[in-house]
Image (cartoon, rainbow, N blue to C red; front, side):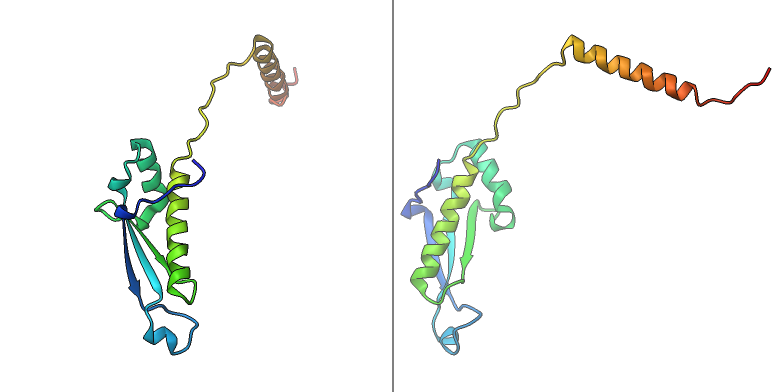
Length: 134
């Protein structure tokens, strides 16, 4: 799932006063965006929800909301777009599954080589013992 479309009914936006560059404009205009995504409304598979919870970490609330704060840009629209893209990317990443591990078994020849190497090392170490002069 390369790109995840966020349904509008699962989103809630709140505009905050941003920090950083922008002069007095920062103090007057609420340009930062706090985006809340109701994860339960997305209808995710249980494994995707578990992945999202792991990936989101502290950005996931106890109520099942994904909280993204965007304040990188100086305009509301740019921050709004940034927050939505970051949320969609996070949810898309949660849909990626790890490849199943295929169990393999060592061949008989590999087992024999391993045993021979162990015997060789054992002989070397046995030769390191005390020298007994008769």
